[in-house]
Length: 448
Image (tube, rainbow, N blue to C red; front, side):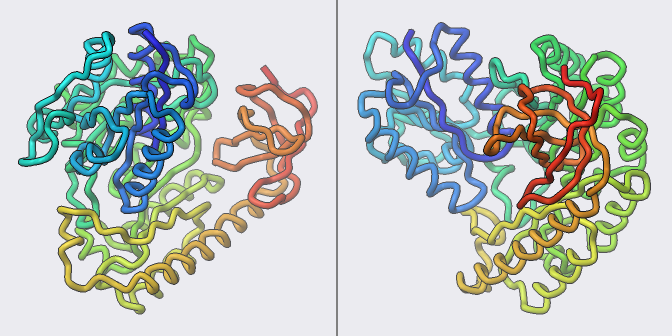
């Protein structure tokens, strides 16, 4: 059937979507290959920022120059939001939205004779409908398909939830992912068992709004109940959770994680702003006092836990006083790291229609100041962990002559010993080395 190559942009959920696509193409007889020789190139896009859109367009142009004979299929969130923009790019054969991403193997099978297959489904008016297959994702959300990269035994990501029911003023994701939907618990258990049987030792559970897992199912369930079931019914050695909203950090969930050595003590809790006024304008449903209580709840039971946050710099109408409040609030929290996003207007969102957008130079300066603070918080977290002994999983990537490993509380550790990937090691954290910690493997440590 030929070879394929997939270029992926975006979050863990998008990476899981890519893994599911790759598995379905392999099941149809396609072989994974490199971009320069592939018969089919799939570009799985992100659209969370203007920069993500630009990166996708740049990649499409570069891939077409590299391999002009390949059929290029563009899918993902950007394809769902603005298919006509992508269909107009040279070299693009088809644009397939998130609504019809699962149709890609069928499309290629039909086109295997070499004939061009016209497509005619477009939810929005206008556009080159002969090359676009996009529907209304709110009316026809695609089935949720779990995906983990074929052959990837080291920290595979398993997507168990998709979509979002929240309507934050800055966010386009509900428009391109649809409403929240969850994999049934029995299917999650089966997927985890399959990954464990293939050799996975740590599995990352991900979703667009992971903390809402199970609320759409009948009967309803919760993320905490799912974790309980996975611990009881599978042999997974470590689970790690992706992002959780502040309101989803419940006492029951924290108690469960604190009581188990099989769940990573790592919480990513989006903040977005440290100003209550800006949080209200963003249509966020919590305020800084609530966020602080969630952080304190975690650290009371797990003082060694890593807590990371997202923050947006330069939201429309954000004053210098608001920005300084955000810096002060973050400085007061024992965060392990910070992901900083300069505000990027997304078409169709309430924030993009506000008349009080800030100058780009102000947004960039505020983002720099937040990143500098984030680096200070990360360094302080690394120093707090010096002298501790931690269990870590070795990663495929080498750093110089050192083996890289990841602890449960999200510290990246370098050890001088040559250890294969996907092995548990017990390490003593002895020194800082840039953004890593230098570790020493303890005698008698488990390395299998």
